[in-house]
Amino acid sequence: MSTHASHNMRSKASFENETKGTGKESGGGSGGRQGKMMSFNNKENLFICFLVTLWYSSNIGVILLNKYLLSNYGFKFPIFLTMCHMSACAVLSYVSIVFFKVVPQQMIKSRSQFIKIATLSIVFCGSVVGGNISLRYLAVSFNQAVGATTPFFTAVFAYLATLKREAWVTYGALVPVVAGVVIASGGEPGFHLFGFIMCLSATAARAFKSVLQSILLSSEGEKLNSMNLLLYMSPIAVLVLLPAALIMEPNVVDVTISLGRDNKSMWLLLLLNSVTAYAANLTNFLVTKHTSALTLQVLGNAKGAVAVVISILLFRNPVTFIGMGGYTITVMGVAAYGETKRRLR
Image 1 (cartoon, rainbow, N blue to C red):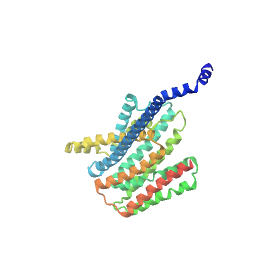
Image 2 (image 1 turned 60 degrees about the vertical axis):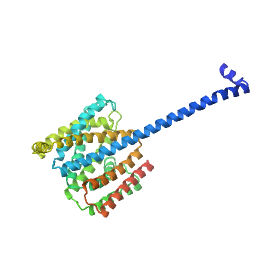
Image 3 (image 1 turned 45 degrees about the horizontal axis):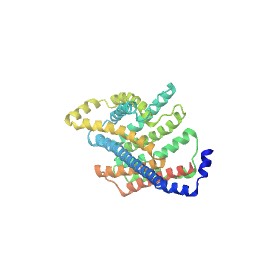
Image 4 (image 1 turned 90 degrees about the vertical axis):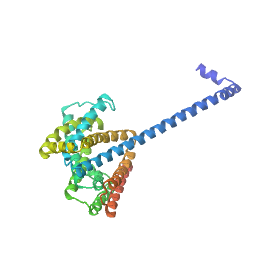
């Protein structure tokens, strides 16, 4: 109280002199703080741009490498290829979390939690294997168009699992999502029924996994971030995929060794593809962490469009005006669905 009183008793002249003497200094301090904030924001924006570039590159890269290996290179083993991806994810997840501390390690706390993670891993395996099988028969552009229907399957599974309805306007936004794929299918020159069914199954499995994850790991004690979940899912996936590959792709070892002898770059491609698959998961986690859900949604829609354009330029697969129109309608429907959910949240 005495300090406050003495301050009030100072003369006006004295106060003005102090203000003049310190004004320049305080103004400089404020300007310095603003400069530092602007510098920090610029660095943060550059870092986010860098992350998004890596996210796009790794996601699109793994799709294109999968397509090249499975369709253009003679390596027709999607199950074994998925096992290579999961092996890389298991090893690199362990290194990233345990040694580089990218995120704090979360431990499995119960047998029940382990069973839930194993269930998610099996569903995840199905989605990745199905997607890789579809790339043997479908162009990447059409594969991405079908994959864009994920929100439709997510909405269906969420309703079946919880019986919780969304607003009708939200479901209405899903109509162009499905209609666009129907139109794109009719206009796709390289349409392959089995490839289409596998792609649709992979998309449904991916949506089912996200709904299942939100239900199974919903309690605070069981929640895992995506990187720790990948750490535990990957080894389980390898244990499931290894016998499946040996049984369903019995000549995989002989053919792989033969291809490796004929072309040494095959081993490099396989390694690069597997590491890129992990990078896609890591960068997706980092972009999610550093941006908003809305930004992620917009970037995700744009990523699909970029993948379509690059695949057409690289593989020169024929496209029609109807097919591109259908894909555009689907992407617009996905964007409308996301915006509707955001407003009604």
